[in-house]
Image (cartoon, rainbow, N blue to C red; front, side, top):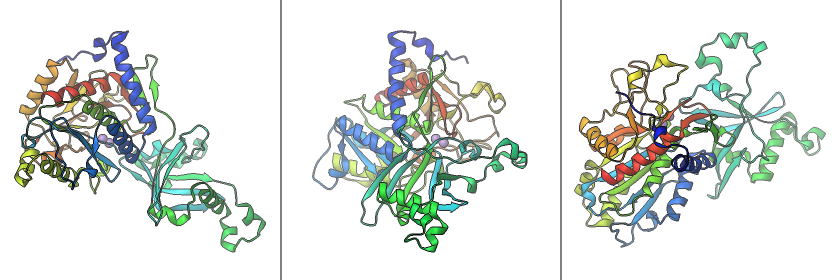
Length: 470
Ligand code: MN
Ligand code: MN
């Protein structure tokens, strides 16, 4: 089965510009939003600007929702659900676009700051599946929040403004790396070696010995860092205990290639699906079925916890909607979930000409071939995969073909080569129709990942088509 390169639909000129303009909006979003909190805040703000009302302010009032109403609900600032109420009763089910907004990174430990040989460092615990050796010798930024005991929150973002300092993890010089280079890939850089260098000047007072106790003299560089944190962020060392600070690659996402057909950026996985899903939700004003967009956290560590897909957040929100669109009934909630259809979007491993041996060419994802569907992901005999139904795939083919959306199908690598999970099976637990779909990525889970702009655009077009016609 041959599939056309999607760029052929967009010759230079007005058509090509559509693709490039959409990608530029995405590039700016990706550069600005590097954590799940930043993504959730961005989407909430954009939703408000596009007429979506905050559901948390309506729950518990007598307000009823009617066809055409648009609402969103934040899940503790780390996830977001959006809905456009359809003409049909909620019982008939939702058309759902789901994606995750967390990305692999390093998180500061709870007690991170220490001094070693007159250098101050922050200890980290990495988040998600990373090749640790890829995260050294790069400019890194700190993004996150510090919560004080009185509940006040300080937003942290250091390393993105060109005037800001950056941080990083050091690596051995080749001259002294003989032993290191003999090690297996997963041992070249060990998890406990992912320490962020943050300072090297000792505190003046401690050096001079004035008012400095023995401890401060001993760790004067660390004390100096603490003095800076106190001055700039009104932060004490104890405040790290209630902070969530993520260490991510510093700098903007960039156009990639002579033809600028691609974008290199941090966190395409899975913001390259979240962004077009969100944008598609703005495209439909008066849908037949109710539309939902779910942007979730914690996918990279198994979709667990209050803000992951496994939480009851989505189900509870649907119950609130059933209550607000008519008479509440648990049966209606269940029917709504069962009768729903979902594109569970996540990135796919794009075919890499440098590593052809991991893919099976007929069933691989390719740059420039548009939206990609994974009937199943999983590994070792499809273990853990959602395995979407032929009926649903047939319906989707009909919808996308009619609108001329470029799409193809793929597996995550050759049989028994590896595998991966997504949020699809969790939606599948409601017995709704769900399939993995998304956009191909090169360098997946590396600090800088790459996507094709036309795949992003076809994903957007595919999502618009799906929510309108499914
Ligand atoms: Mn993902
Ligand atoms: Mn991932």
